Amino acid sequence: MQILLFCLICCPGQALVSGPALGERPGPYSFVVSQGEKRGQLHCFVCEAEDRPMVILFARVPSPEAGNLAARLDQILLANPDAKPAGWVTFLAGDASSIDTQALKWSRDHALRALAVGYFEDPVGPPSYSISPQAELTVLVARDKKVVHRHAFAAGGPDMAAISRVGDDLEKLLKTVKTLTGAK
Image 1 (cartoon, one colour):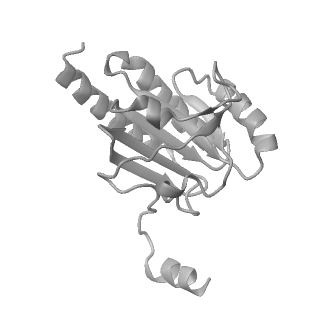
Image 2: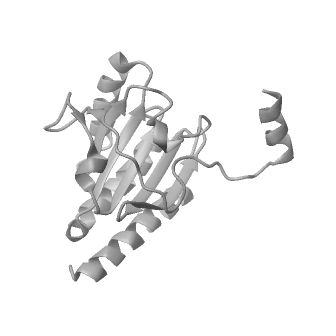
């Protein structure tokens, strides 16, 4: 506790770091799907995505901020079908009995169509992901099995400017993929 307090006092303004480092491979993990045709099943979307561009949003609670971010990412995925992107939201849950219903309602409230939504039954998250305990939201954008962008937000974040930055990163990646594949 003293070390954490020291870091907060001596290192103010440092960016919150959460998730695999840039260039690292997002490891496979399965989680319980809360909506769609795979509802109630364990599924590995990382495995399914393979080399395709992907965006992963880890969230601790189905908050309005997470919903605003997810809605923006969902719009971008829907607008870029030629890039064949994959995307999903993984809630990190200690209590699976309540999060499934909350996640389903949250996904409907935010009209998510392209992003899958589910929960991982451990609040720490998948072990290989190193999700920071201080991160309320962690966003990973990956391509060719490598993380190319990562963002982390403490409770109360992100604001609209941060949502725009995350969205811009995803849009740029998908435009690059479309250019390389010749898709329109």
